[in-house]
Structures are given as C-alpha cells and as structure tokens.
Image 1 (tube, rainbow, N blue to C red):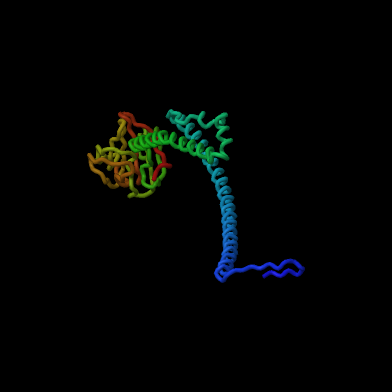
Image 2 (cartoon, rainbow, N blue to C red):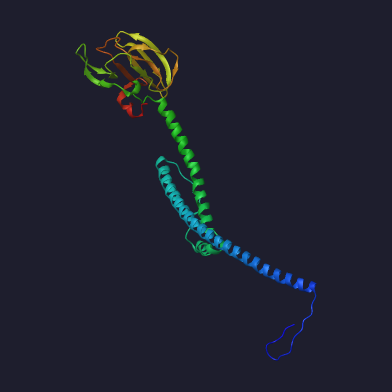
Amino acid sequence: MIVPHTQGKIVNFQTNVFALAFGIILIIGVAASFVFFKQQDSGIREELAHSVRENRELLASFDELRDENNNVLQTAKRFKSSLSQTLSLVGINQTKSVEKNSFSDSDLNSLFDTQETTSGSTKEAADMRQLAAYLESTIQPIEQIGKMLESQETLFTDIPNIWPIKGGIGHISQQFGQTTHPITGVWYIHKGMDISTYRTGDPILATANGQVVTVSYDMGFGNYVIIKHKHGMYTRYCHMNSVRVKKGQFVSQRDVIGTIGNTGVSTGPHLHYEIHIGSDVVDPAKYVNVKITR
C-alpha cells in the first residue's frame, strides 16, 4: 500500500512471496551484471592500453630495424662497388645479375613508397630482396678470387721464393756477382749468395717444392744438395754440416734439408745458396722474400 502525504488516492499492490523473491533476485542479478560488465570493461580498457603501448614499442623497434636495414643495404652497395673494382684489377669480369631498374627511384618505386603505410613493409621487403641479390651476385666472383689465390699459392710453393734459413735468421755475408775471392784474392764471379749465422747447425730449408737430384761432396762446395723444381729451376745448398735428405726424395717448401756448416773451401760457417734457371745462374736476392718466411 502506498499512502501519499497529500489527499491523493491511496495505491494498493498485491503480491505473493514467490513474486517478491523473484523481483529481489532479478534486482540483485541486474546489479551483479552491472558490476561484472563494469569490471570487464575496465579489464578491456587496460588490455587495450597495454596493446597500444606494445604497438608503440613495436613501431619504435620497426623504425630501428628499418634504419639498420638501410645501413646494411648501403654497406652492401659499397662492398659490391669495392668488389667490382678489385675484380677489374685482377682481370675478372663480373656479370650484372641485379637489374638496377627494379629498385631505382622511379615512379613505380615512389608508388610503393606511398603504399608503405597501408600495405606493410613493402619497401623493407624490396630492400632485403635487393640485398639478397647483391650478396648472390658476389658469390661467383669471390669463388673466382679464391681459385686464383689458390693457384697463386701453388705457384709460389713451386718457385724458390723464401729465405733458406729457418726462422729468417742470418745475414748476407757475400752478394751475387763479381767480387774478390776471400782466400785466393783473385777476382771472380760469385754465382750464389752467402748467408751466415755465425754458427754451425742452423736448419736449412728447401725454398720450393721439388725433388732432390744430387746429394754429394765437393772439394770447393763441401757437402751440398741440388733440388730440381718446376719451370726448369734448380737450387743448390753448399758447405752444409749435415744433410737430411736423400737423392730422389721429394721435398716440400720449408722442409729442413740439412744444417749450416763449414765444409769445403770456406772461411766460416755459412750457406752458399744458388738458383739456376735452365743453364743460367741468377741472383738469388731477386727471389728471396723474408716477409713471407714463417
């Protein structure tokens, strides 16, 4: 019953316990639903804010990645330019496997740049394809350089070109050419290069790959060894104290073939070293490179 304060009409309501309980439950359910959805809305807002923050961080990371991608691409361009110059110096012709028109600053490329914000990382994907093309185009030239260096290394091991004393020690005590004989005092042509370490027993190295063709003793040269190399070249090592190779033996560059001595006609321990090309005797100093001695 609702009784107004004024003289208005009294309003009567009639219900039962079941309807009253149902109404109370309905009100509680509505209130609980409101609280639940309010909490859900707060959770969604927090997740949305978190997603926005993550999106900003991803965008920042993407910008950094794009800058690094651009730096790598520029480095690849400089590398390819340097490689092309190097190849031209060594006489290797590089085929152009990358079409520059595909990635030039043309109208079509500008169209891709315009669509970048709507179609994703179109430019970055194109840059990575260009980088891959650059790297792919350098594989064959680098392999050619490797093969050329390998052949050069083989050539250098077949030609006498290292210091004949192990460790690069010793000094040239007598040059190749005209000089006065230290014992007879007569002018003569010294057909080799004398290297001294002031002592006996220092290891003597084969200056190139080859075959030992002579192991002998001579009144003038003392104990000596002759090695035959490719390209008609021979080397002779004289006044040796000991010999560690045999006739017919194949030796490799830097193999120890004997030790410095004072045998034969000699004023002190030293190595008399000769290089022959065919029947000609040449100055060994032109073939000795101390820098590459190991």
